[in-house]
Amino acid sequence: AQLYRNTWVSTEGVDTVIDNIQGSGAGTPLADIIYSIAMMRILGTARTTLMECDLGSNLIGPGGPRKLVDVSFYDDTAIPVVECADKIREKTSAVAAVYVNTFRGFYLTLNFSPGKSEALIQSAGKNAIDDKKDMYSRELSLTIVCVEGSKQLCIVNHYKHVGKQVCTF
Image (tube, rainbow, N blue to C red; front, top):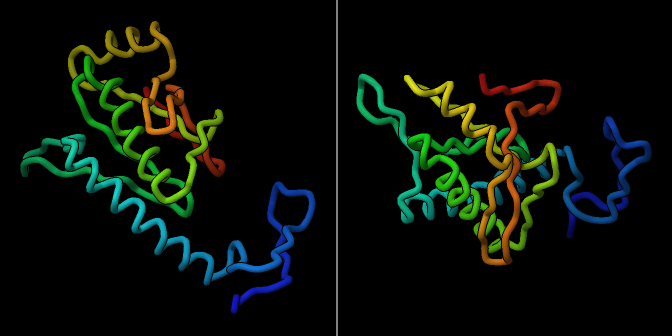
């Protein structure tokens, strides 16, 4: 039996109420727990695949390399990709394909609409300004080849989410 039946919820930005016939009810503690458990498995699978495909990312610091992993906030995930400027587009495409295929394996489809799944690419080091000019002079999307065909991942210089903006500089 479901915990929530024939309930409703309203949310900012939606003009009508959301009718919940059965399920866990969006925004409720049970829904948050179910979502977290499901995403833990999906993201764990994606992380394992990235390591198996040698697509992990590290930052090198005084204490040695530090492995970077995805960061999630509710239903949003940021995936760090670190690579040399001449290979960053290729690696970003490959990492995105891992996530597309992993989510697809759990019968989920990632949303590549504008403002949903996008890439911010930041160069660092002595050639950073030239790298950025070169990047934005080329096509501003990456082709992701995945099991179900190809998709386009937009490269943007800022991303706005829940009133906050992240920018490359």
